[in-house]
Length: 263
Image 1 (cartoon, rainbow, N blue to C red):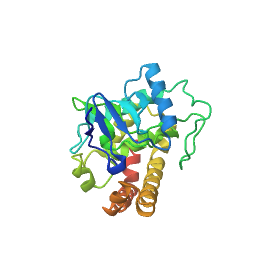
Image 2 (spheres, helix red, strand yellow; image 1 turned 180 degrees about the vertical axis):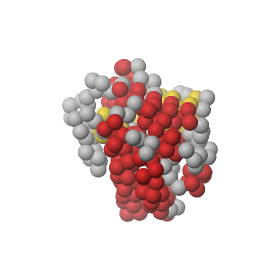
Image 3 (cartoon, helix red, strand yellow; image 1 turned 120 degrees about the vertical axis):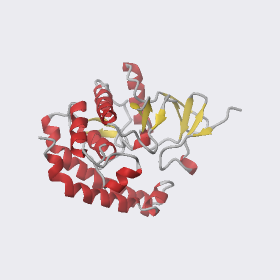
């Protein structure tokens, strides 16, 4: 029998949600948006975008089977140099641009999310949490864990990347992941420049970051505090809500300083 090797990384990668490696594949439970995500991953394969896993099948236990992406998840301490921020911005731009011509199959839809899609929306990854970024030689090369993917304006993925990788959070939270506590404004501008974020989206970016902080708190409160879903409940009990509120308060106190780097 082929052995299953547990993979480390995500906060909800526990119990019934465990993600495992089998040879050169990954097996993981299907989310409520699995069909839509599978269609997107198949599109990426068809256009040669290599920054995401390949969807291969559904196994006998109902788990999705994905290709194993060679590299290392960005575990603590995450790589802290500025070029990582730039490479992530370029990876996001390639991922978004690779979606040209993508459409969901008939009968497949994205579950509702609190972000309204616009005519120029793309499918955003929506969770640039450090271990969801795969590194080779310390540089971002691929994105995994697409469970929160959904259509949204491009700026939402830039905002998610900024929250984690600039990082836009209190010093103690940044330091706990080995990330710098200085030059955040310059790193934010570098991320936007590397992505090629247009002037209109730059003007919206700080409002989007504030909105993501509110959405994040409500997700943790609902999924962890109220519904007690595996992984989410443990995060909530460990203080994830308080951490997000602290992040939000830090961000609001820094908004004027950050804005100067986006003009």
